[in-house]
Image 1 (cartoon, rainbow, N blue to C red):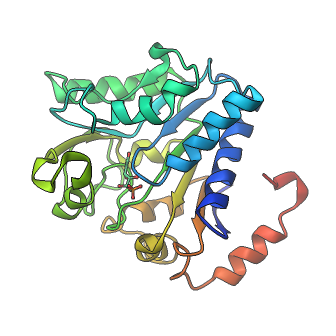
Image 2 (cartoon, rainbow, N blue to C red):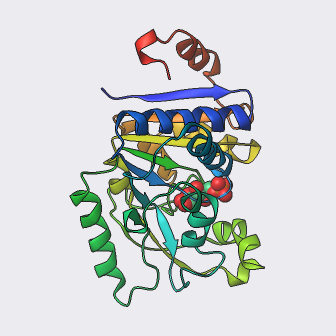
Length: 263
Ligand code: F6R
């Protein structure tokens, strides 16, 4: 099976809820699932829905293994803008996941290349990632694989673009305080996840989403590599879908999914 499935939902709430349902269903079917998480604004509501499902329906995350896409280099995990802090504040702290099941790249590692290799090894020894949640940058990045990233890259150090530092400036009280470097899973690493769930919300994502789905596969739009993924689900609100050409077809396909394929 090789497929990119494009699902357009009416708004951010519906898209986030469907994303949470896809994750929840997977965890119900495989309580020791290996899940890949993203940070940023996009998955916040999806995470709120997961927390709600944990609280109200007893969705159990106690046996999952978690990996995160990326982390800033040189930022203490306790820094409020670190992705460690983000994950514990917005998700892990509310779903009773044991500490030792959480894997976030260590931006304070004294030997960054060794830490990157170790991270890859840990993914492998956990059996590989079942579902990787992704957001997309305005420049088409996934993880922090900025344009011109190798399409087969592994977990490594990357230098953020000025645009990405600007987009994250708010978390640091100004873009000049955003770290220059990050550790990120590579595109090759992400491509090995059994399922990728790319969530994109709002007008600012319309262009990179159109390029990702309907443009050529190119390192200049790193997310476009997902066209080659065995199972990539692209979950959009109307705004993020607004620059796509074949929206009627994507809706038609989704509305006529065979029952056994429905979420
Ligand atoms: C975050 C990450 C990034 C973000 C992207 C979009 O872990 O890997 O690729 O998903 O920068 O960020 P938001 O969601 O804030 O627009």
